[in-house]
Each structure stands twice: as structure tokens, then as C-alpha cells.
Image (tube, rainbow, N blue to C red; front, top):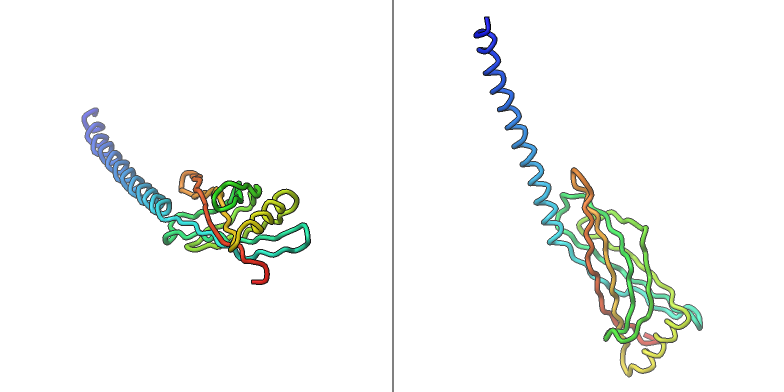
Length: 176
């Protein structure tokens, strides 16, 4: 009696092990493909910053608007973006013109996403900017530095990566 019980248990056990091995290999292949797509997205992400508006809106106030363009390879991994802790300096970095943030604003990323940013300068930061404009015989160049937090939605978890964002731009002279 025992030999008959053993005769069918052994092939069933081997069959179950084979099924588990095949299922493991399929899951491993899928995970590797997802990780490869994530690595490609990480390596191909680019940021550009350009000034879209500068206006003296009041005697003691100026408005600046930027567009940060995020370019990614064809997206296989869903991602979103937050622009954090961005700072404004003179182009040589010697004059600090303020700290601004757009945190808590998450934007879904596509192959090319444009993020508008705006700042209003008042008080000491505006006075520094006006001094820079007066001292510069030609145009005034400014440096934008920030951090982009990109959140990738991987199958098992969310992966967060920080990227530096830097842009240099020229302020138009009054009347231009």
C-alpha cells in the first residue's frame, strides 16, 4: 500500500516544484524589465529653465516667471515631480536674491512637461536686484538653482530621486 502512495506523490511534488520555478522566473523577468525602464528614465531625465516674464509690477515690487521643462525618455514608469527649494542669485553667485518654493505641488510627468514658476520680489531682495541692474552696463544675468524631487511609481514601491536644476538667464533692460 505504501509504495502506491509514494509512486504518485513523487511526480506531483516534482511537478509543483517545476511550476514554482517557472513562476519565479516569470516574476524575475518582469521585475528586471521594470527596473530597466526605471534606470532608463533616471539616465534620460533633463531639466531646462527659462525666464518667461520679468516686470516691475509696482515701485517696490517685481514679478518673475520661469518655465522649467522636464524631458524624459518614452515613459514606461509613471512619475511625478515636485520642485523644491529654489534660490535666485546673481549669475556669479555673489548676490543672493531670495529663496522660493513650490513644494506640495505634485505634477504628473510625461515625455515633456513644462512647469510654470512665479516669484514676487519685494524689500531687500528687490533692492539688491535693482542695484545689480544699475551696476551692470549691459544686461543683468541671474542664476536659478533648485532641486527637483521625482517620484517613480515602481510595481512594489515608490522610488524618490532628487535632481539639481540650474538655469542662467538674462533680464531684459527696461523698455525692451
